[in-house]
Image 1 (cartoon, rainbow, N blue to C red):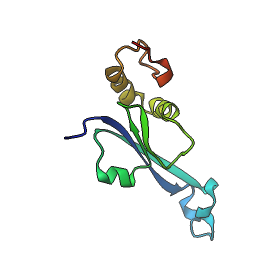
Image 2: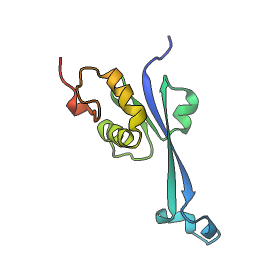
Image 3: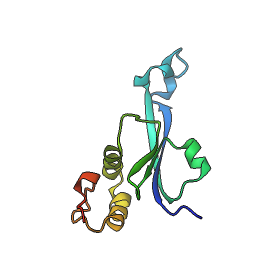
Image 4: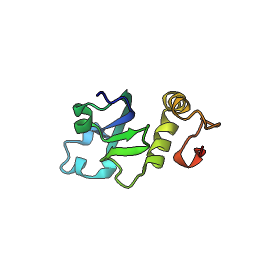
Length: 116
């Protein structure tokens, strides 16, 4: 049976803040010299490649964190809020479809859902 659950998959890529200084010994070992590029995908189901390469995977149907190797202290609600703030054009319509009972779909989190 095919997995049709909706997942938010986030990838993070490291890059130097100042590429001209990477020749200095130890430059990339200092976390202050590293910047991250973030990209997300919204998919139905998870591929093996996603499980291996992605830094964060959220199951939006079950409201669970499948994988979180980027910010291990974050829970589902805080991760979803982060992506919703950064990508409202993509996340808000999806949340409106998943949680039609929530009136204000501009800022949905698990605490705001109403019990039926």
